[in-house]
Image (cartoon, rainbow, N blue to C red; front, side):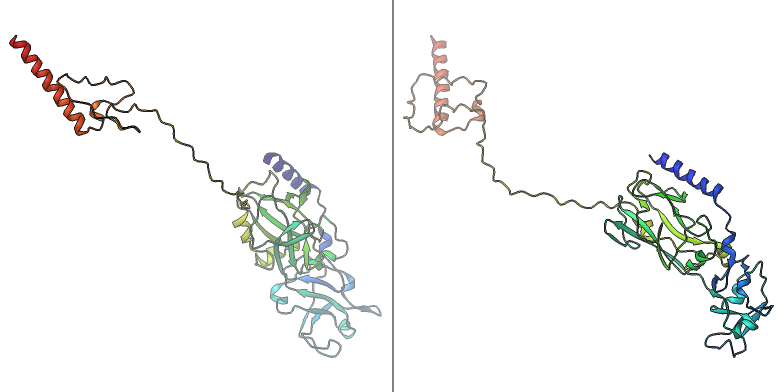
Length: 353
């Protein structure tokens, strides 16, 4: 089953590689759009610049917080490359807010665009019928349906004019227990769901469409018990290439709870208890041992009379104990001695005769 799962996922990856359309529309910046530090190759469309009476602005100005662009002098002015604009962190890093078309646009309140620093984080959510909850710092039990929540300010990128579904976006990086990075997962219906090129439409966005849904069925046979790593990255318009892997901006740290707890933790099953029954004693059965000739019985019998006639000791049967094993009493001892003496005397008498 695992082998089949890998084939399906790999095929889906190749499909994305060969059929995804170009992402040029993500570079088109219109008047009032938000651009992010590190983006490059942007096209500033004519709407960015104020035009009136046949005169079009060619500059952009930053006035700072609290300033009145219509009456104040700008703090910073640039002449941008309209066809390949780069949001250079060195220039815009401490100037994140509104930039105005200049010189005429500022007097007329014409905002060219807004500059912002990217922010990105990912959380793990358990999805159950009628309920979902944050499992980022919890343990994952095999069989749980999971979703990923992207918390980010990057969503304005994906509202730019002309953006298509196959364009670049936020990628959920998913590394399985053998270190392979997957681009799609099996959801709880068995369907394959892409976890790359995600286009968040709000600051809090659940895969795949914005509301909590199972995108990872941990009970699927394709996923074995082990450690899994999940993090998010965004390299739209070279953002990550230019800023680097900045935690919380262009990438996120792996979800620690998932790596530590992907091995299923079985739910303990309470042991069934029943009322203890008192067993009925069963008398032990042992093989009967014949009582010795001198054993005491319920009815007392007179002690045997000692005569000169030798006393013959009863033969020991297979089930009886030998004389040496039987408890001796003084009476039986005297009887034995008397018998021996009688035999000895009889033998001597015969010899004399």
